[in-house]
Length: 107
Image (tube, rainbow, N blue to C red):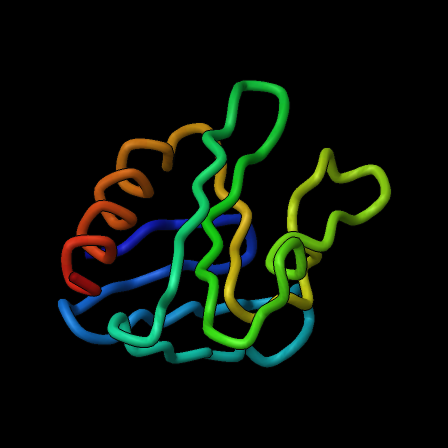
């Protein structure tokens, strides 16, 4: 299962979540997260004007630390957050299915 995001993608194989980020003009970076280690998920659906995001919360994050809004980004996590990815409007359905599968896998 895969979600195409903005400058990257998220894939889930049933146990591992892989967040792949590919900045323009740089090498891509993959971040792997075990679904059992995720303590929460956040999904903000995109609309036709603004991107949404998918974010995975891991243990040890203080309340509110999982979302560090950037100025001018409408409360989205910063691009440097390795556990999140912005998504376009056309990826809303796929992102919703991926988040549901992660929630089910983490029990």
